[in-house]
Image 1 (cartoon, rainbow, N blue to C red):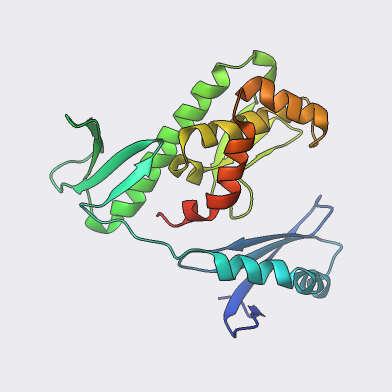
Image 2 (tube, helix red, strand yellow; image 1 turned 30 degrees about the horizontal axis):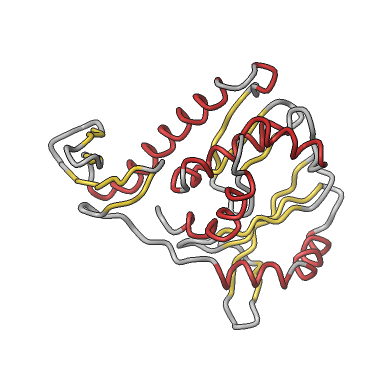
Length: 235
């Protein structure tokens, strides 16, 4: 348990965890919502904890807005339905099976059968969702010119960023994009691919995004801005 806390104006005490990283130039904050609300801080080794906490105070308004508006997470149980990559999926627990089974029903919806320990139901659903999302992202990327392909793709559970592209060729995506409309997820992928050629958000960058994505970029951006927080409610 962290001994450092961020106390909100309404009295909530949120633990702060500070990580020292060599090679880091700036202090970064990563607030986390969900069941275990916390703030992760990464700081350069040359900066002190006091400096990091001063930075936290400078970001107080943003942090309080984040935690005040962070939706409460809902937990999945057998019989629940969730939307995943534009599919309505019902979760059914079956203790007799070992591996997950993903079945297309006659009505056009899907059933995800999950076995094993009932206490691990959410964990197994989460792993399935991540695996399927990664497959879809790879399919989307392979449809673009090879010059945009990243060296590595990984999924993360980020609170404030949907994707990122590093200069080393690694692209990261929030696995919660699986719960967004498919074209919104596709927009984030094309957004990050465009950073291969433009590591900024210049007019040239947005031209590249539109070339890769096609019509509807503004609509996808608007949906994510208005509804992005809801993607953190599931699992």
